Image 1: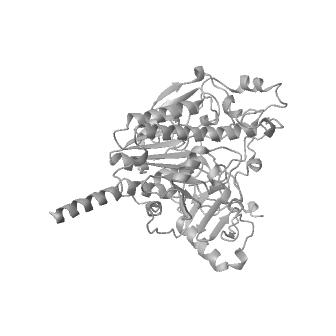
Image 2: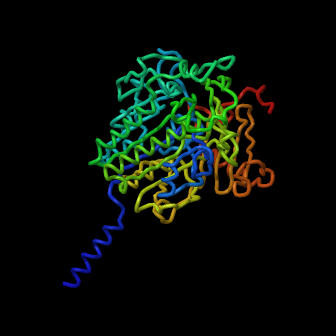
Image 3: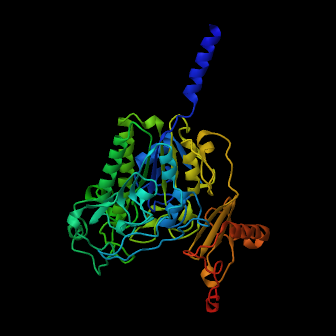
Length: 491
């Protein structure tokens, strides 16, 4: 009898400490949210209480990297687990222009690619993508409904997402008309400030603010699937410009921040209070995350739901964003579009009650291509062949296997992180394969090129770049995949 009691108590204890089966998963992807633009990473002007709460209740990653330095390729890496040396989409690619009737969409994700959603769907998860897609327009194989997502709501096309008061969003394959179907350009310029703030709102604002609809759709998805495991990929367009936010959110920030109007000189829409409005957008995103957390609590799902928040790349240089005022990338060099740290090192916080230690921090070097194998392991699925390594051991306090290196390529640039070393090539368009080398342990700001002092490291990373890169017909690297014109070799 005593043996039986001990056995039962032992079994109960094991059940209490074992990993929950098939936890719900919410992955929130911000758009152009910089390394230092949330409070838990050092921001002191912009309020992000819910993201900061997640960091207090979970784990903050200090060396996490996006898949690329612009939207579409970064999302491709995230969803397929393949870095940009192997992924299909390696840069932004447009199917149309800026007119109201132009075709929508970017380069479509092929059918043969295996996505996180397809893996989780096979494990019995209800799957939804809500927000900005960017990997295939209407009537293409890249549509999210054809890439493992049961439900989609939001912008299929990245260009349409430049306007937060759009003529329509998409619900699966049907248009959801907003703002009475009225279209206007998200890229305008004025020569002088308008007479007052009301004039700007009358010209550029509309009644239907798209993020509100996407937030409500996401909350409803949680509510509708509260009795089964679900995966919600919440890909908010915030804070990607144009700078647009409801006036009540803007008023929460000091009027004295803005002494000059933004007139559209760096593209996108003018705004009378660009600093306050940009901060308001980020706080609005934070409040959307709060709405998701509140719904989890209402449904009794908080303890068995993993919530991850990250960003697709660093802070933008365009649209009136004052990255110096907000110290958006902190000590990091570069912005969106750059393969220096400011363009690709991004915030990531993970909350998973009972599995991830509250208030913890990790310096494990990880990237977007690790998310697929991590979530596959969490769901009990076998990960398909990819470039990532599951960081589940890091989350749960186990022994973590490190990457040999992390790799990026885009346009005419390459970069690699190998331990403490960072290699960057920026001159491929001019036939220049020179590698800049930085020691991130002593020079996180990448200010001192030490390539001449470490030729062995440079040679090793050059060889690895060759190994990690597979040629792409759609997104070829100049000089590496094809010979550039001789007259361009002047750099």
